[in-house]
Amino acid sequence: MATPGAAVGLPRPAGGSGSARAAWRRFRRHRGGLFGLAIVALLVAVAVLAPVLAPHDPFTTSRNAFLPPLASDAHPLGTDHLGRDLLSNLIWGARVSLIVGVAAALTATVIGVIVGAFAGYAGGRSDELLMRVTEFFQVIPRFVLALIVVAFFGSGLVNLVLVIGLLSWPQTARLVRSQYLSHKTMQYVDAGRALGMGDLRLIFAEILPNVMAPVLVVTSLDVAQAILLEASLGFFGLGDPNQPSWGAMLNAAQGYIRRAWWMSVFPGLGISLAVLGFNLLGDGLTEAYDPRMRVR
Amino acid sequence: MSGASDAGRSVWAYVLGRVLNAVPLVLGVVVVNFLLMTLAPGDPVTALVGDYPAPAEYVERVRQQYGLDRPVPEQLVRYVGSVLRGDLGYSFANRQPVATLLLERLGRTLVLMLTTVVVASAVGLTLGVVAARRPHSVTDAAATGFALAGYAVPEFWLGQLLILVFAVWLQWLPAGGFRSVRESYEGFAALLDHARHMLLPMAALSFRYMAITTRLTRASLLEVMNTQYIVAARARGLSERTILWRHALRAAALPVVTVIGYNFGFIVAGSALVETVFGWPGIGRLMYDSIFARDYPVLLGILLMVSVTVIVVNLVTDVLYSVLDPRVRY
Image 1 (cartoon, rainbow over the protein chains, first blue to last red):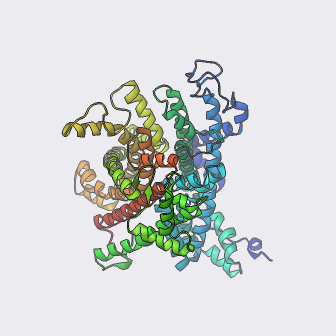
Image 2: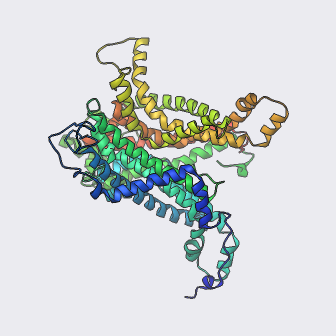
Image 3: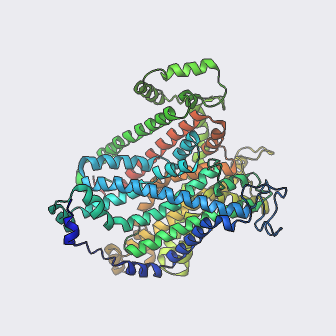
């Protein structure tokens, strides 16, 4: 099939946001965004290097239960009720949080882009129907539904990612829809149509690259929400039982709060820092993409 | 919000339209509940009875009532029928009908949530105003930082920290529960006792909500302060204080109303987590206990009740918004 558009070089909308370099310059000026980027980079490093960084196996128990922080060189952050090393659990927990958070947010982005693109591009009845479905997913209480699904069908990593992803896409869908509504009447889309491009090609190859910047902002905020949701499920005892997770650590800490404050303080710091990092990154990306548009 | 497109109709027509709009959402929730029940691993009767030793004749009766030997569409119709009659099944772990159990617990959860919404909205509005009055000042930075923390800190962890500080170390407030078990109070003293028990859970639950309200109030106030009618008010020589509190805030507070509706689902989730931390005997605590008791009818009942509540609250705030905002016409 011939690809006339590529040869002619259709004019792109002058987005006003300029080149990637200009975007990076604006991002760099946003101190919060830079701080968020640093936190996220640190988390990624810890998650990737977990096998090297963790001093102990996170599941190995010892007779040194309830060791406070700094009491022993072998366990700088202390041990939990089963004598497991807290620091090692914290490090491995970063990996699980990040994997679930990013994978679930990407799942949500894919669903949201597809739903939003078709709704905005097609308009009319299908738009109305898709938006009703979106509204339904927006009002249904995510946490309660996720909890029940995981309680029924098991809480492995894959299930967690799917459940969180399937319940997190409405915001992306609404954003993408509004973008498509305005883009589909622009000249470059008309030109593409005149050149004989099909709808699918217009939707995914022509319009999509032009609307991805704001979508990435929402994805970053979604990662933060997904990390929170995963931790909440873990706190309810519904995390992946074969993975160390921050939420599960807080669940264990609940029973020993008078005896071992460190079991509660450190995992909670981990969750808060991760969520803060992705939220700030989202703010910075907003600034870089278009300072006038704020998602939150 | 249906804007000027249907101008001329009365408020009631608008309200009726919104109510009709909510009906398919509620039906959708019932269908999702049914699907969860049928798709649950094992016998669907487990989802209806729970994994608790129940008498065989009851199991048989449930099979009959929901027509579990009939085709799926007929099951769905029967299920919708029982839900509409208010029959959500029986909880053997609690030895009570699910509907009765939920209603009994609902009151305590609502007290916690409503106090949270009121206190958090008030504090959030105040902080938002303080921040917006001098943008980019130290106070503004502090309020913004506070809001960022509110977005990031999980409420169940905040609850644990509050217990650590105020119950374990300072010993000012009780670490959990609904009332003192050792003493028995009456009248006003009993009320005060409940309030003391509610203070920490409420603080844990409000933090995120305060953050949302602060951020929103600040943003919408900054936007309003640049509009023409504020400029006009300044030109008339009104003091900044009058402009802020009498004119700007009225417009800026409107989005806060919608935020109540939009975030109600999050408050429900937060209250489930916070109730678990503090042993507050409401719906959330019940949910936590039901997971371990494998008391599925209770879980499905909670999902149904909470979803319907969120839809209704959204409806009410939407209508309220359109009534409060003179710019919205029907």
